[in-house]
Length: 221
Length: 114
Image (cartoon, rainbow over all chains, first blue to last red; front, side, top):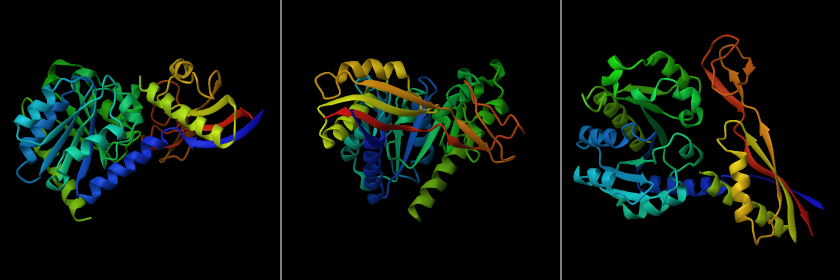
């Protein structure tokens, strides 16, 4: 028996493809955001609201990750007038760098300022796979409960912004915002927090402004 | 279920390093997995037994070394760990922390027959 030292990161293949995706986005001047959430948190609603709020100042593109060939989400985005590509993960619980790499050539990247990647609804698996996007946003929602950051710390790690959707339900649900925020702060002291209701429109202007600032800073990099 | 693509990565790395070392068989794999990597050992073992068939890794034993998460409190400078749920610093209740261990996820070494 011989021992062979390996010391290789198990995710290195995905990570190097993610680096290629990043390079492709940067060569085209596209800022990429990876949006993650559990199913039903309101990812597509947030994206549709975001389109309304920023489409006058940013050219958007959307990549929709879905576990099945159901185009409900992509159809909604396309009918909002945005270029969208659907990735059918074939049952996989997350997007990975290969899937995004296959989707990018289907978009006219030089006509896009901000690419929104809607990951598969899941709080565990997407955290393990980098995509090559520039920053991560998690959409949480009030009915999920305020303890999720403590139970699923991985998905909240390394996020730049957190949207807490469905704040219109706060009067009806025991949800301690301070406790919730604290759980995210532990691993992301500088994260941006956007309480939001896609139903009432609360919080959308603040989120849209932050996105526009991010995009402007990226264009002037 | 993200353990399947992850197990495929492990197999690819082990086969490649085994072949480079002229192995006829890979007998053992030593994996280092931090507590913060959301990986279930049993799932990896399950997929491993299936996908390693008809490769030089068939029948190889997987050994998991788990590394506990260690967080450094940026407020009081002390380190701490946690069991199941993430917690604020138990020494000063600070919530500005840095992960110093627990994110490991690598194939450390393999035992081969040549």
